[in-house]
Image: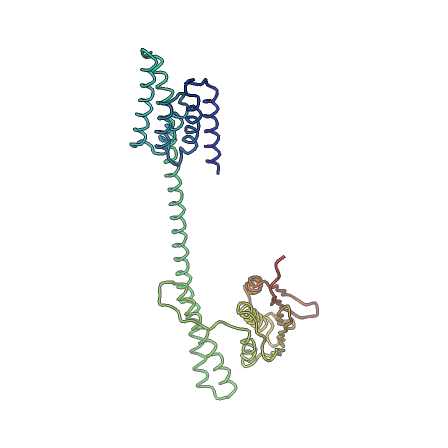
Length: 364
């Protein structure tokens, strides 16, 4: 759009300069407006057809002067085509035009001819070539900047991949090793124990450790990004909340679950987020307040899903925590458009409450 406006302004300026002059041929007054219109069109379309516009303007100037438009079209050819044959043809055509007029006007005045040659040929050509080189330089600098940006992104991706592999190695060497030991020791205990209750608890520990180890191996394969394709694990759903409570009860915890039967049908992202939040909240409750009763509630309405996990605050501190559990739960709730509140409830307990919208907002 900007180039079109510039072309129109230049064409109008050439038209104005041409109209200010005297009528060159009084015997053919009808021909001059046609020549001026053709010159205006050539100057206006010089970017799309640079060499053709130049030759047309030269032809019009040969038929009837003045030839303001020839210098403009010569500059355009030089700026768009650079030091190539179209520019040479345009320069020769302009020089031929000037030579023709110098012969028609009588004996040549070499000083005037030289000055006109500089102003009408040399200056537009050099200015056009300079603009062409400037545009080429800017394009080269732009390409270099884009190439540098691509190389930076590639180096960043390589750094991320290297860091992921390092994390995978550390997790494999430390976490996977420890979990494997837990699973092996639990299996040995379930074989050697004499009491039935101890056998059941040991078997629960073994199964949980084995499941955690399998999930950890899949995560490690994803982090390595250079091994075989990990097996796809089923996505957790809202229906798995009841199993979470049952597993914790089997491990010896006291859990009171107030869950609807059947479980409500919710979108998969919301069901996955609710499952993970309940899982993290139950883990935190069992870790920080062992021996207390944990309440799990789930309720739905036409507008949303609400899950709550509450437990009394324990007098004795449980296992230490890194503080990332609540942050992760809040992120999961936010990504699905929900909200999460976690903290003391003012009645001597700790409560995690997550609310998810089930009805999409109508556009305004």
